[in-house]
Amino acid sequence: MSLAPWQQRVYAQACEAIDAGRLAHGILFCGPVQLGKRAVAERLAQRLLCTARTSDGEPCGGCRGCQLFVAGTHPDYRIISLVLNKEGTRLRTEIVIEQIRELSEKLTLTPQYGGAQVVILDPADAINHAACNALLKTLEEPVPGRYLWLVTANPARLPATIRSRCQKLEFRLPARDEALAWLCEQGHAKTTASEALDAARGHPGLAHAWLQDGSLKLRREVANDLGKLSKGELAVVETAQRWVADEFGPLRLRFAADLALAEASGLTDPVRTRTLAAWFDAVNRTRDLLRTTIRADLAVADLLLAWRGDGVQTAGRSRG
Ligand SMILES: [Zn+2]
Image 1 (cartoon, rainbow, N blue to C red):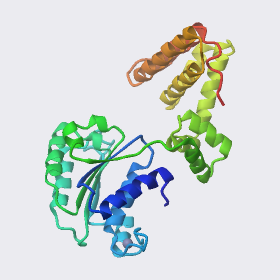
Image 2 (tube, protein in one colour):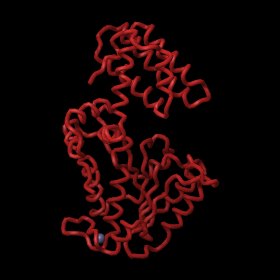
Image 3 (spheres, protein in one colour):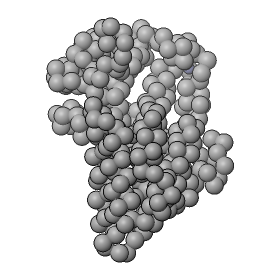
Image 4 (cartoon, protein in one colour):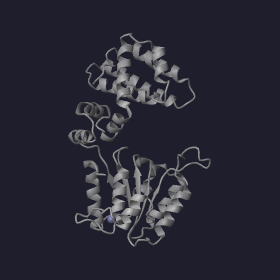
């Protein structure tokens, strides 16, 4: 699997640091979701565990280290993530202290293949308080050749004590041309790729996901609904019911908020801009409400009434 250009830049930077012996024991891979932080961490891990790198320094793919890595059974490599609860019914929402103890133990062992030991913690911001303290202890006692990598889209949720002990590798949204070229390489047509990229505010990973799972179509429908609602061509209650009839209610509201924001950003009329901004806030509040036991259709109907009633007639106009 080849890395996207923005991933490649971070990867190259990290490789250079490793080769110069400047890579810290603890690294924080941070940046927006779906930019491939984990993919870069995994590639780096394979590079460290490969015993026969190619002439340009890349993992060979054929040595024992690479084979075990690809099979997911390399003894010197571990990913710590959210696991199933005791009942096995759903994923836990926290990474707990037992998992960090397991990680620390791993990092004190001698690598079985004589190379490095790599542990990836993802999502690192899911560690609970007790686990945090255990993690801090591990970060404070680095052993050469043992790496502990924290992957997170929300580094601010990690205690400063942990952040300060890690070297930061930051992922940033690429320039539009680069993101668009990458989307086309993934097999998307340029016009829809461009539409998705605008919808995702320049985020190629999100645009790709939306193109693949049909979310972009959903966004078009939301834009269309809002346009018709403000013209009185759609009934509020029925539309609200339809919006919450499946699991995509929160995503519809996300798109509705985005559309209002996009429209507001193109306006010069301060009154209308304020109206749209207020509606944007209301959408986000309603999205939070959907997680509660409130009647979702009623909450959304309120919102759509406000949309229609506040005179934001053209705000639902699709921007493509
Ligand atoms: Zn190899």
